[in-house]
Length: 227
Image (cartoon, rainbow, N blue to C red; front, side, top):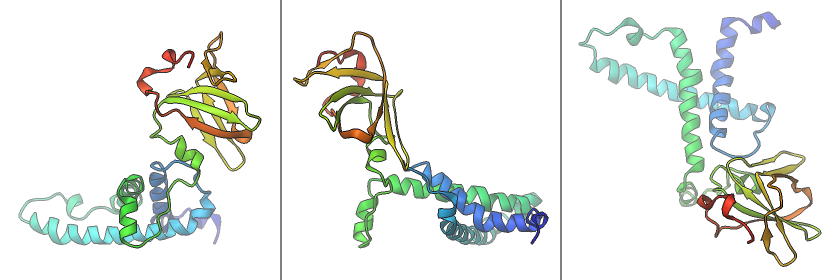
């Protein structure tokens, strides 16, 4: 098979139906889950399986549309594109519309509170969708608040993790940017530095990250002096 044949409409439609649709499902679903996205080669089989599921859903929807919707509106003068949709509209429905809806549904299921209870009732293993504790701790549900960083040598640094802060991780490192930094003395008392500053931390040598849950996010960092 030559490169030119791969770009033919027939070949493109085949890969769009049985591969691209699955990748669209995975892409939309991953927007609901914190953490690293697997490499494209690692999710090839999953994309193919999801594409086949999309095909099945489309067949069911097409049968329902033809036997129920069109039949019930047969007395009305419907436009031709609605009675017999063109191939391009059918392809868009298969590759974009249904995969987006399926990925959105799967993403909401992974984020739902009743997910674990349902899996336990079905005697299925409960596996959290977020694979790294770091990503879960700093997920999009993390409210702004104070954090206390303790290093392996006992040094402690305080900070405000807010909307302008960032926690990132990959296969080789994890780091944390805090929009406001505080000094913690040997007695554990918090002090504001003489000049307001942010701080970027490499978590490689960090022993623990404590979230001070008693602090209210609406207080903001401005009122957190001399704790």
